[in-house]
Length: 217
Image 1 (cartoon, rainbow, N blue to C red):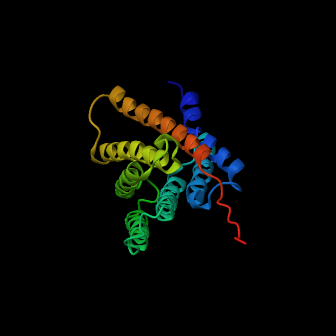
Image 2: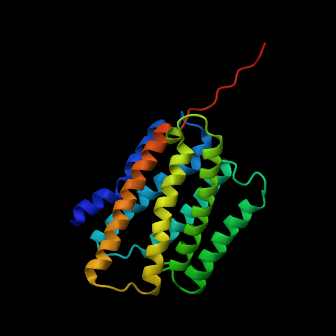
Image 3: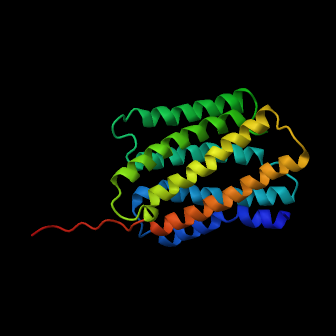
């Protein structure tokens, strides 16, 4: 597969970002954190594309992005009501992400390279939170579950971040095998990223409009 095709697949996040921008004023505000993250992801991809062409490292912007992504997605789960029973979990998870990122990125000086342990940690937390939402939607959704945006988004989360955990551990502890095997691992990630981005785009299309309230006479 060519670099050009890989870049096109990577920029598939633009679909969800653009649809979210077009529909932003009409959609339920409960999904704003997810839309914000789609815009942020597109901006980071553009920045990374520019840096790669001027031969500048994109490690710092990627590391900042994963922190912001983890915070925005946790905020999204909060908007879905995941922490309504144990409200203290919301600030605890946010705080753990920030502290973990600071320790690995700044204290241990990994900001100029890939912050691997943080990626594994926050990916695992997102997968765990996603499974909780998926279980809830499967039990409560009475309509077509595949048209439920929260269900679709969490489905994408589980697919993408599970594989991200696996690949991060490979790179962290040494990925054995031939060069072709390592490249296959990378390309699988690119395909999963494409599928996930398409699921996100469908989810954004399925986000309901703002609720209208009327005064009773």
